[in-house]
Length: 372
Image (cartoon, rainbow, N blue to C red; front, side, top):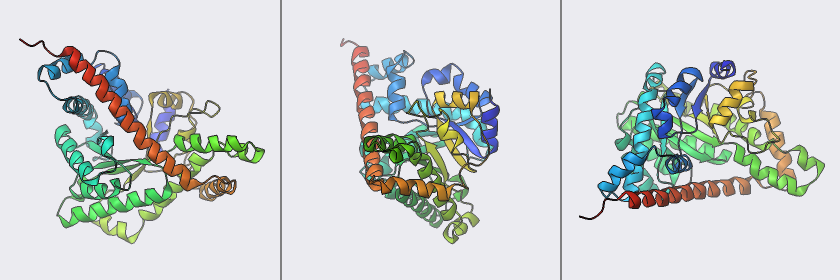
């Protein structure tokens, strides 16, 4: 079952699970995935926590205690989510030690309602790092215009970061610049650059979902022939940009000081269109020094029937450019698509966070002790 996953790992793709819940932790499921499915990291987001906390009774005891202490709902959410991340980080600590800090990481996101507030994002990132208090944590910061300077500031303080919600190649270059600027600040402050890590989460499937919708609306044979091409093409060109930036003189100067490359992370790799292979965004995005964070269904599909044939990225830049150019030639604006996806991404996470707050508040009210 795990041969394909081992081959994927051997090709330099770190397999991270895009999910977390207390049940996964306490049942031993997460440890099992690490031992048997080559999982070496975990990512979370507001939607994942909303689903985990609203289902089952795994959080009842902690919610009862929090209600007794009469914590606000915001405080309660942070106590619950950081506890899960801390426990998952402890389970992954052997991986972290074995890989010198590259893997064995667990990501936790700043409050998505702060996506357009640089100072608040920095403050939240510092607070989360302090609350979780584990060296193998990554603080997720969205790649919004306000997020970029926050990334520089947080990296400059020596806090490792997972940059999330990247859709466009231009924004991705901005993310890499923000990371390098942060490393330069950390170096000036005398920090040990070898202890700072980062990944850049480049979202995949949502690009196809939006562009395919527009191609379908056009309805021509030419348009339909391009369906399912744009997301992989976009990601492959992101890897080309990564290779360029992390071979530059600016980077090499930092590398000499012990800095780590910011790895591209393929996010949103669950296939949305059942007409496509359920391993599409895994098998077509195999490249050295990358991360693929998968929902469990995608992980299982890859283990069962994924065909890993080696590097499927670095030889495909010309084709990728041609495919995106063909989409543009049909009148579909790349800039419009990626801006829409960024706006929707921030909105979806904020909505999930608000739903999480509402459902948790209801539980705190239900469990609150009676006045004596």
